[in-house]
Length: 298
Image (cartoon, rainbow, N blue to C red; front, side):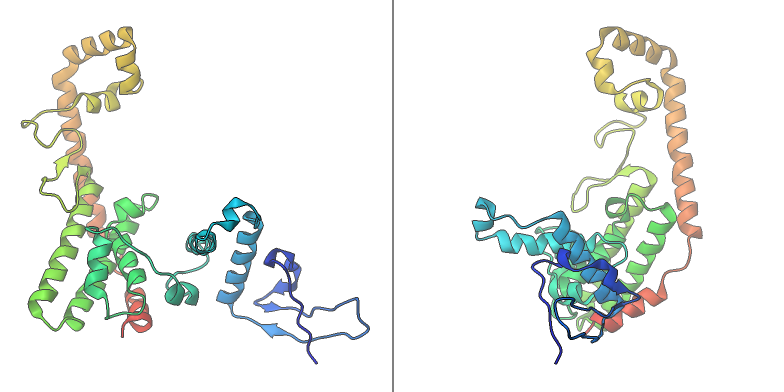
């Protein structure tokens, strides 16, 4: 008969028993009987097991006032879900735990909330798909460590997926067009951010170049933009030091026109450079789109 040994935490289980996606034979020295049962687990399950073990090791259970809080158990679940989502070797779109068990909540008025409302009833785990599309569309906000090309490919892929959704999962043509219009607007805003514009989504304020202000007259350069490019310290330090402030004001009076032209030129050069990278970026990820459709869409 097989014997099952229970551990108080996953941290008690010897990691040496986990190799090549299976649990090796476990022998119990306290008995004369040797149990050679083997349990095979998938790669994803093994990753989950190791993630849970790491989570238990890093956050030991403590019987204190926090433990007695009625929300403690739920918070532990959320903490674990967050730790899973942050592990690079576990794809949230491949992992069954997240597909079936993680539900995101979004603030009203956000892009994610809009997507959730439009996709509810059309996909499995609507919140996960809403989060995934929003993350790829708004790459400058959600993927700041990625390259311009990475974000461009992700953006194009998410736009193509959104187009497929609009064509196949909306009965009303006007509703489908409204859906695409909003998605495209967020994508356009993100490209402007990529180029150096300041953009507020869901706002009547027009995007403006980062070296000026939204209500400033044409040609106006904010002082902080001069400091960022030509100062030897921060704006705060300059204003807190009378000598540095006087020196910088003198330099500005002497070089203002030259500096202004250089800032505007640098911005324009960068804007064209970013657009060129976006235009030449790799094709969208067709495999990713098909994977999403097959796993999530009803």
